[in-house]
Amino acid sequence: MAKENTNDKIVALGKKAAYNLADVNKTRPQYGALTPKWLTKVLEFKGLDSGIFRINKVKEGETPLDVLCSVEKKSDIIPQGFVQYEEEPREQQLASISTIINVDTAVADVYSSPYDQIKEQLDLAVESLRERQESQLINNDDYGLLKNVPDSQRIQTRNGAPTPDDLDELITKVWKEPSFFLAHPRAIAAFERECTKRGVPPVTTNIAGGTFIVWRGIPIIPTDKLLVDGLKNPKSKSGKTNILLIRTGEAKRGVIGLFQRNLKNEQSRGLSVRFRGIDDKGVASYLLSLYCSAAILSDDAIAVLEDVEVGEYYDYE
Image 1 (cartoon, one colour):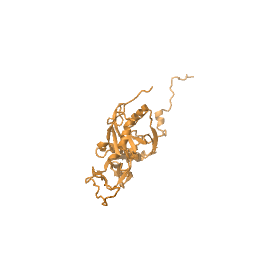
Image 2 (tube, rainbow, N blue to C red):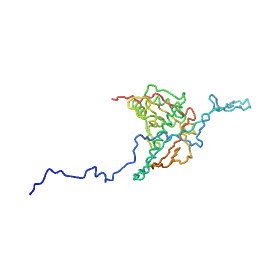
Image 3 (cartoon, rainbow, N blue to C red):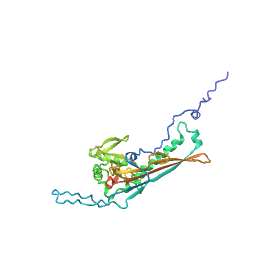
Image 4 (cartoon, one colour):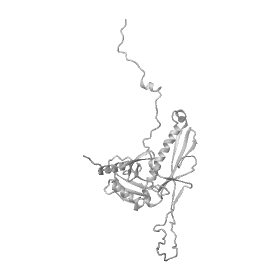
């Protein structure tokens, strides 16, 4: 009888081969750079028909009409006058943010289960445009909020770190129905540390599905578009940024976002998606265009706390 060969290896189905037949669970494409974009949710927007928005203001230095307030009513003459307007008011044109998405139709046909490849590509492109929109609303050289804060509405921190005293001072600049603070998450963390140091931790509130800390009844909205030393995600523990205080709403003569309404192929507010056709190689092309801007209707609708240091930390016993 032949002896059994005990040196033979056991042959089994390998993982790589088995994987080819496995039905795995999949997620939609995950884009880590996307943010909640709270600013565009809490800022009031106004739709435009012509793509141009004119801000008519009363001429600088003019006072309201005089009112006759004589108790003895010695004079029976009604004072006459008028309020002078700026003769060359500022006109803002909507800015365009555009991109083109190309998708191979063969890929879309074969690999569109369970997720439609074209829809996923367009959804990610739209989110990227919205990210860009929020950044431009804050930092654009023409209509960005930071660049258009009046000099009289700019203040400096007392000692670098954002203290309750600094935010109180900011409120004195936008005291008529302020809507929200806007700050980088690192600046919010720095403010919370200052509150903890003083024993006055801020409360929280829920707005538009999010939870935010509140100071003096005013929510502090986070955004990474208010850069720290010019960066969204600074590596250093220290750095400087800005904190905005905004009153929003046209009826309140506040800050409003602008968008073009009634667009052809409109997908959402101010956003148009147009199919450009399929080329000879079977590549489908889509043009995405987003039209937006912002307007500060009165000087006291916005203020900024500048040179905010985010790197102050404390040791507690």
